[in-house]
Image 1 (cartoon, rainbow, N blue to C red):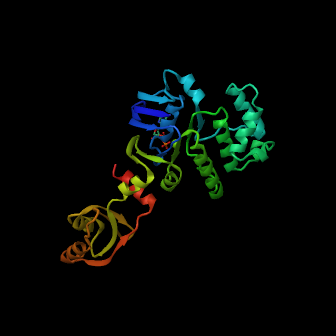
Image 2: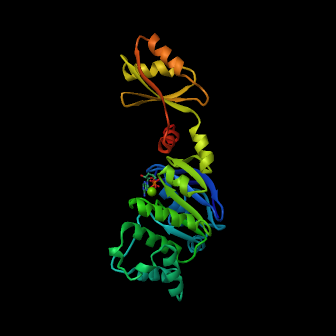
Image 3: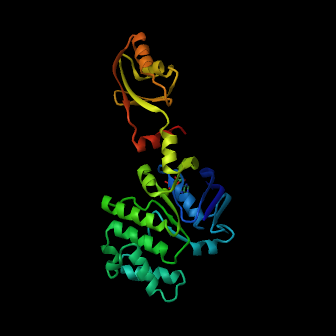
Length: 304
Ligand SMILES: Nc1ncnc2c1ncn2[C@@H]1O[C@H](COP(=O)(O)OP(=O)(O)O)[C@@H](O)[C@H]1O
Ligand SMILES: [Mg+2]
């Protein structure tokens, strides 16, 4: 269980995490989704006891990250953004080293088990330097899991690895969700949607939306998009002309034309055509566009 209440972090005067509140229940996979600089890593570092919050409360399995940071560290497994890895150790040696750091006395069995969990047991004698990036990432996962923590926090575990291995890491994360509480960060909406039970979208340090992927999708997707190209007017003039139409919620330049965001259930095509012609311009193109998940995400984040 992760409980976060009004969590805030300032770096000097810069507000990196701004009054965030959320929970992740036991057995739940929660995704922290946001673009670069949104505050994902900062949030995770506070939750793992690596950095104190400026304000607010965070608890892991009931223990406060500031007051009981030792208890928190026992119960949390953390895969940081950049995994510190010792290239000259073997896979088994590296995990055994971590198991000992974690205070596990006879770690052999535990090490073997965790290497099986991340599908690296056939590489146990391989030097870390000879592992692929994806395997290293799974080794990082094994390191985070070796002490059987209740809560697992994974900071962008699929970044920089090839597509096949991305699939494997995602599958490992989904498996973890069966036994652990998992907080998982990503900047890829489709990944959050595939892996998580619940997604929290953050931008500039605060939560912009949260919910189950399907709900969130509906919430984000409300409204339609059109693409229009207007001849004889510059971008500013055409933008002004179109934004006056009721039901149009936003206009952004795209290629030679505009993407027009339309309120759900409204069909503005007739009015768009009319306005353009009345203004003395030419309507060169007007068509509905299907939004990709990424675009929907940017749409929500971009409103900030
Ligand atoms: N140690 C630091 N000192 C000052 N600013 C920082 C520090 N770490 C992160 N930041 C800033 O805080 C914001 C959030 O960063 P971060 O938590 O790393 O975001 P994310 O992981 O979502 O990319 C960014 O604007 C970043 O530049
Ligand atoms: Mg980060």
